[in-house]
Image (tube, rainbow, N blue to C red):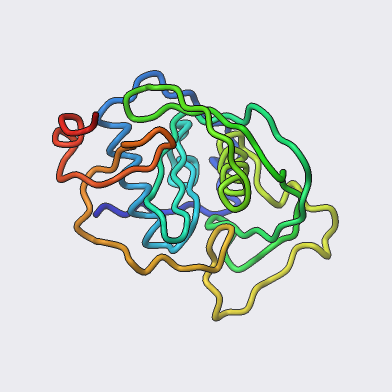
Length: 201
């Protein structure tokens, strides 16, 4: 397990647009794996590469009770509807805000083998994807606040995690490199980058 420091506001990297990943190689997979380790340790739901000081278009998502997901060069293709949600951010600890997110989205991304994915998402997944893709574009959820009253400090006994107060306590510290293995980007662990490359279909 390799944990990365999560940068916090007002670090200027959070306001920079991440660069497109040209080739998914071992270094990209290693970074993504370390991001998953970091996200799980923090108890969050999503993390963008900007938040660990890397201006690459990589995000990782860890929904409760699901395997982690890695998406490279993700983009929102279509968004429909509006709903009010409460969000937090690992880079803005101790606060929450009420903002408007889409009801459903269609997004595209690359998997570990550079295969293009097209996925329809709603609920927490759609919210997390919008939040993390915003990060890649230098946008914070606080930019979506409609008034100062919608931004507030949380109680000290709550974890400062993104999108949800659910903690992921089933983390395995011995996880190896993490790569997608299914059409929706769900991933699983291998002992090394080389093993992952050999075993993934």
